[in-house]
Image (cartoon, rainbow, N blue to C red; front, top):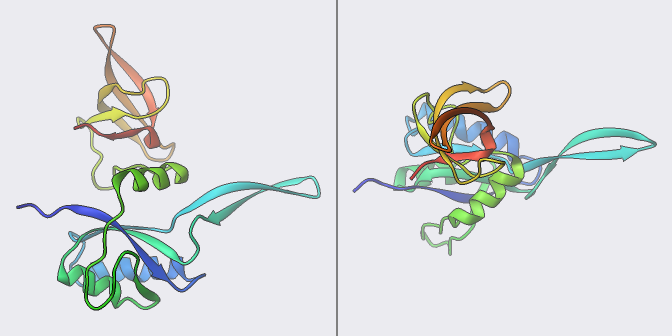
Length: 180
């Protein structure tokens, strides 16, 4: 049985989220746990603040004191995360050695959408020739094949079937997910 990767909420010291993220990623790599600890993100969004007529872009943490970890829950991975400096525990765990409850897929999608991120890890999972489903924009609901990936501009070129004809379209990375 293939183990399932799921998202978990990890409690950290408030203000130390980015440091905990870095430490956890380094620990996962040094301990050979990259297959179990897939992604670590600090939920945040860009906001525009206006002060004295000057607009400034700021990064605002969505959940101060929390990070999200996409992982395959195993005793080893659980141990690595729990024992990373700055981690105070998992949300959804009753303590006493009980493993935590993962987030529901729709909860994760909502958070990732707010951040402009995607369920596909574009660095490791997205590749040319892959089938993806468009989940936003004018081509919402269509399935296409990835032709090119432009990470600098956060877009992909897809070939989709538009009125019975293969058509190349450009879609933002946050508007795609893996096709079922």
